[in-house]
Image 1: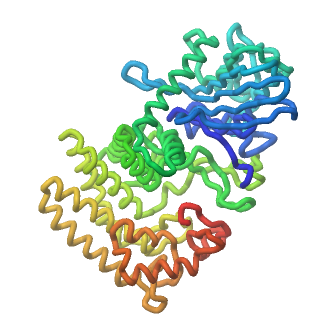
Image 2: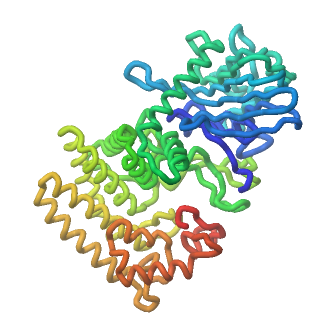
Image 3: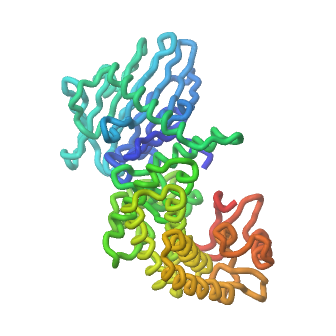
Length: 520
C-alpha cells in the first residue's frame, strides 16, 4: 500500500481524503457513513474525484497548517507558485459548533502566473449515479441523473464554464472553490472564504492548545490527536473506527470491511486517549452516545452501532467497483453488528472508570453513569461463560476466547473500583465474588500446561497477540512467570521480520498473510 498516502480534512460531521497531488479521492456527503460523491480511492475509473491539475513542470508538496486539520498542497514551477488550503469549516457560533457539510478549497496565490485546470468529476452513491451540472447565477448545481433530489452546490470565484470544460485557468490572485451539500443562504465570496478559513484555523489551534504537551514526539502525538478528533461525530458523540470502507488488509484479498461505524471497543480506546490528554468535551459527548444506545435498563450492548446509534447495519457488496488496487469486494454496511464480542464490556467500563476518576461531573451525571455501570455488569454476568467471536471478529466460529473473558474480568474490576468510590458496598462485595469466578476460570482453562502458555481459546494451542494486554489491564502481573512464558511464546509464534501477526490460525478466509501494526 505504498501509494495509500493521503491527507485528511474534516469537521466532525464528515471527512475527505486528499492525495499528495491535491485530488479529493474520497468524500461522503452529508455525513461519514453517507454514500460517497467522490470515490476514486475505490475505483480509479468509476469513482470520481475533484482535483487541481497542473503540468509536469510543477513540483508538488503537501503539509498540514501546523496544529490544525487544514491541509496545504503547494504547486511550484518557474511560471509561478500557489497553494490549495483545503478545510471543512468548524468553529463555535453562539452556543453551538458550526460544522456544515462542505469543503473549501482556498487557492492562495504566492508568485508569478501559475496555470491549472479544475477537474470536477463527482459520481454519486458510490459511483452508481452519474451526474449533470446546471449553471445558476452564483453556483453550479450538481444533481444525480438517477434521483434529482440528491444534489450539491459548487460555489466559486473562478469562471464556471472553465471549470466544467476543464479549460486552463491562470491564477493571478486569491480564489476559492466551495462544495456544499446545502444551498448557501449567505453570500459566498473570497472574503467569506477567507473568514471561514481563519475561523477554522483558530478553532483547531485552540483545540490543540488544550492537549497535554510532551518533550519527545509532541508533533506526532498532536497530529494523532487531531485525527482522532476528526473521527468523532458531533451530532451523537459516536467515534468511528475509520473514515473509509473496504481498504484491504492485504492487496488482492477479501478482508475488506466498512469501518465507518462506532465499535464500542475502538471508540473506548480513542476516548481513553483523549481523556488522558485533556479533552473532556469529546469524552462527555461519547458518554451521551452510550446513554442514548442504552436507553432502558433491559437494553443489551452491541459490539458496534451506526454513527446515529442505529443498531442494524445491513451489509452489501458493490460489484461495480474495482476496489482499492483491484482488491474486491467493496462493502458498505457491516454484518459484524450481529456478532458477540464479549471483550467490549471491559473497554467501555475502563473508559467509564477513567471518566469517573478524572472528571466526576455533576450528581445527575454520576447517577446516570452508575445506571450504565450496573447495566454493563448485568450484561457481563449473562455472557462471560458463553462463547463469542473474539476481538478479531471471526465470522463463522465461536469459542471460549481467553481475551474476551479477561476483558469481562476487567469490566467487573473497574466496576468494583467505581462502587468503592461511590460507597456502594453491597455491589462491591457481590461483584468481587463474580470477578473471582471469572479469574479462576481463565487461570484454570485458559492456561495450557503442555505448551506453558495462555492460549487464544480454551482447549486449543493457538496463540493470540491480544493476550499481550493481560498485564496492561491488570489481570496478571507483568512479572508473573505465566505471563512471561506467554509473551515468549507469542514472540516465537507470531513475530516475523519485526512485525506481529494477530494470530496465525485459519480464519474465515484462510490463514492471515499480513501483520497488524498496533500489535507490533
